[in-house]
Length: 169
Length: 449
Image (spheres, rainbow over the protein chains, first blue to last red):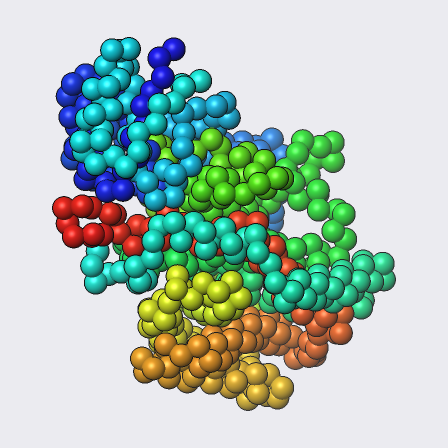
């Protein structure tokens, strides 16, 4: 498998310029950074969709239904006469469903994050600890053997303080 | 950002180094405090509880008609303390308040540990904690099931949801920082943080999904926290006992919880910044903002207190009047009541002055005073209501025994012990959010923006 190039930058705008240029040239680029860059990246590379909300919504609905079925269903299974009070009661059912909506909504959101971000992942991957400190990394993949020099030059032209050639797996 | 920034310019590299240093470099004083808190847990909490379990609930001051006492006052108090951590963190996140960034991690941890402390009091109060499984819903031949109409059952669902969600909220926001710690430590720590950080690399995709998921957690946490303390208030308010059966209890409890939690954050941050030498991250600006929040909460809390007394007095029933008289004008409760008014209504007014808000000693005294007052409030709710129910021939003062007082003090040792362990095992200041506060480095915009 061809190695990848990792350009390390001090300034975010330098890295984003290089990312845009290399992406337009047909390379696969991804960014490694110590902080979320949000708008800065979205302006340059486009805004990805937010699928997490579907997980959250589905979780909240499942939680609500679970709460309803749990309270009403078990009230039917284990009938507890309480001095003339109804066996099925709306208020406690809704209260408990409210809590279970939140609980399962939170779980689904977490699962959604894990699936979308592909975490946890414990096998070796391309990484440099500097990108978790004070450097912004531009990872370039899909480089043909004869193009490494050219990509390296573009990375440096845009202010990379260091360019590393790293094995993928 | 510009003027919103709450901390000075610090190089990114220093942020990583400083936060990891708080976890890896430990002074002698830390071990002394840790030992004292552990000893306190064993001596003040563990042994008296063992004695109580062995001898029976007779060693407490609980007797007819007051079968709820200091344990449940502690339960409410600790649930209240838990409120500001996660709730405040979530509200400040939604409103994109920059001064949240340095303090929220420890505040969220405070939530988790205080919920733990509160939960243990349920077992202490239970008397026979080994029968706890009777409250768990599982199919059984005895034909028993949970009574979902009981507010105590609402409590189980609300508090377990709150504890779980708070823990997830705390962990989720910490993933990038756990990765940063992973990259700087060696030995067993390296292995632990490698597992905890889940293989985080800080790719644009990972950040994207993290920043998209985080607001959903925050949005869930806010109504959840409000529901938790209103449900705790219904443990009392859904009864018919004078002094407890009040419609204002839900907002009263929620406001009180945020108030005591915010004061708890101030106290904790004062010790944290000094103990871990992180004054440049938790600055006087943070105390300035928290001080203003305390003034606001004090005024709301005081208002609700007046409303509670006024509506009780206006109702003009002999039961309600007796309940108020017993609480406000009968020693020793009256001393406690007026001390509470002093610490929670009068003292926080000094925080109107900027100088007081930004000075550590007055801020510490006021925040500790507020929590003494809030504990008294929770205690008075229970100790002055159940002993004064409808039949005067049943009246009986509730005086906690030494066992109860000791376990109460032990709970503070337990909380301290948990927090001391936390600061050595978890990044107590958010590395990546502090960097966000410092600003993103741009070449074309004159340094950081």
